[in-house]
Length: 64
Image (cartoon, rainbow, N blue to C red; front, side, top):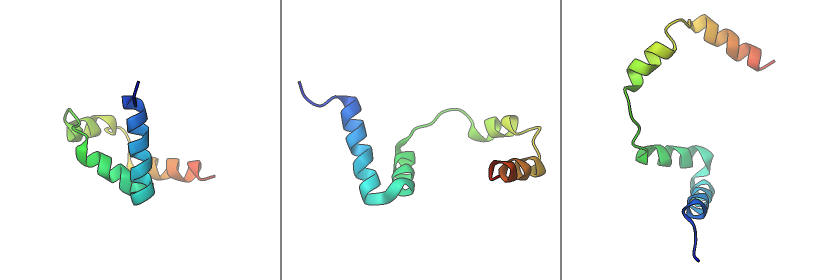
């Protein structure tokens, strides 16, 4: 039968991680991800009621 697309995707990801590490592999994939929508607009809407203090507090709480 041959290699499935899912298997190829997994093998490719493992090869990228082996050569570039997780961070580098992720950056590589992001170069080719098309994306859609208006990121800036969506981000502003998503975080409209959240302050920097809220974010810092959540980070500190998650580290406990």
